[in-house]
Length: 199
Length: 151
Image (cartoon, rainbow over all chains, first blue to last red; front, side, top):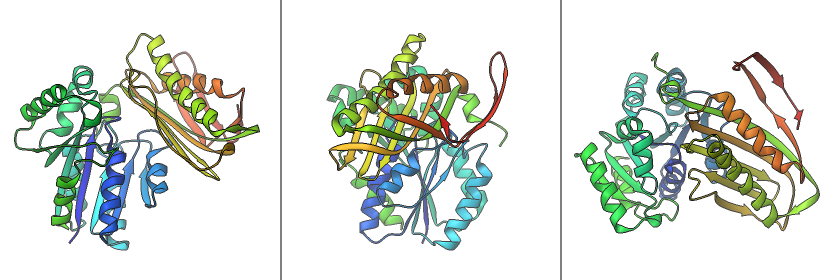
């Protein structure tokens, strides 16, 4: 069984931190986890961060895998699935990627995945500001996600938490919502369950 | 796909890889403060342009004795640091530094980053590596390939 999971969220929402936490937990349980990380600049930072936690990631830079680097994503998926045969491939796109297009790109790559999941991540601390300044992206990135993780709950009070939860619920009513602090490894169980059950 | 999300999001980005050498070596606490200052300077420069920082400025530093990760995503929150340096002093290492900022061009982001790096020069020697690009600036064509470009 091979699962593909993308962790999608706006710039600075905590994708890399969440990826490291999920990858570490599943790795400890014996799952073979492969990581594809995409950065829009010509020199990436996230790949080095991920590798420093003991993973070996494939970093695709200087473009976005939902548009200019779509071909690179498909080739990388094919190589990883054939040569490494992972239980789980986690994709971390750029913070301005569109998840529905990535989903389509993965399907077209025909790497034989048994399921594909989308985890949308929302920065609760900055949600109000971001939805004001970059509403289209913030909405598109979580709409239709299997799970929306409202992150950085260690930085907000219950009032903000309720507001952000309502905001997310209005955008994507069918998505499961979980509250997490990726930095403090809190609330990750639902996300781990999704990936454990699948793989 | 013909759509380019970077253009759609009106986002500028730039990344660079540097090596640094400090003589004399820098106490770790001071080194962390310097790098946090580098990131906070990016936020300050965006604010000086009359804009709000919407995006991500980040750096990851590898030394022979551990790593340092510093992010800036919100100027109110300030730089966020993950310090895994295991030595009391830092002498040399490699730095990856990148910014993705909405409402700015690639060139503006590059200038902000280069301006912010100026603050480090009093304490360390910086060498930019793998800095290759070809793009059109506002008033002139600009093409260069700078390996080991000394700052």
